[in-house]
Length: 84
Image (cartoon, rainbow, N blue to C red):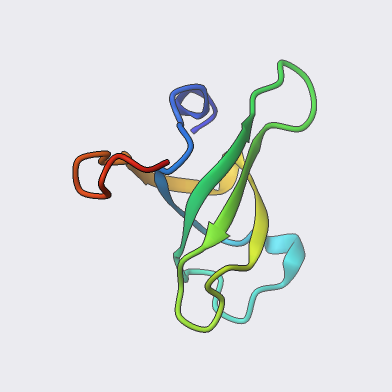
């Protein structure tokens, strides 16, 4: 997913899984987050800061590495009234 990281934009919705080192209770669970900020680096930290969209976690911020992203829903400006 690292190649697609550069095409992410603020407002896109990403689906991701928690990394194994966090010892998730349900490792197969896919989380949803709205992209707030993207970092693309040649070496080191690459990923994005997301606002979690799942029930019970709305509004929480989380760093998601590029490798954890499973799919992307592009931001649709027309549906949101043009706000970003």
